[in-house]
Picture (tube, rainbow, N blue to C red):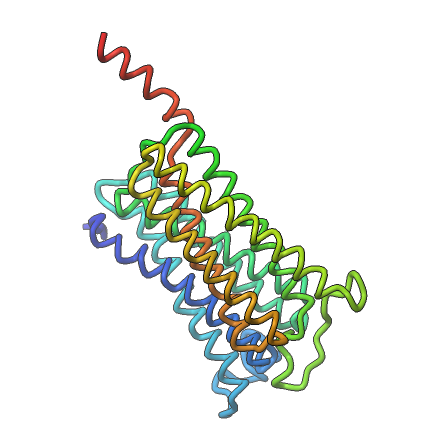
Length: 308
């Protein structure tokens, strides 16, 4: 008998994949903010061994690699086992496959990041690939939970999608601001890492201002959309997701102001660089909870036909 599993059992695999994908962002940011990015300057081993000597920065970096293995197992399991769910759920196959393939690419890119000594362009790519995997993980969990789109109108659906896309741009802008900041990931081991310096001495300040203004606009739009969604009686799942988006943006704004006015302390920057993993997951849930504008537009026609 070939191995199969129920949707209920597979649900825990999907949960594990999404949870580890969020946690690895926190872990990776911790590596960078403790200056341990080059604690293991070689890959996949650590300075020629898989059992490195006891050193704080070495084990912070190597511990992140070990946890990456856990993430890889969870995501590959989600990718493979989706094909063994019975009855077969074809809507799970695509996001599951993205997880399986994407986590392998993420491991390779992580190794390249180390081999290129934390070059900021590759670090940004590494972070954004994590955000891409979170899209697949969030959609997969939504579907295995049996989530259904809300009953909001076309305006709410399209406005939610605009907010999600804009939120992605805000996160991208944040990665460039971080690339210009003082926390390059090599301080703990004494390594000098190239920083983004497009505008000379004003690069960091300019990028922080751009990112901050974009984030402020996002917060205002999110609150307005939340109010419109309630007024137009959007689905409960969408309203919950938008509520979480508004709360998380507010927290991020507070953390961002604290770090800016206190010369970017590493502990606060770690929180600010990690929370987007949670915010992005909730934004993706907002998208899927809003549903399709075509489906929403077709609903009045079906109602009219049924009444006739």
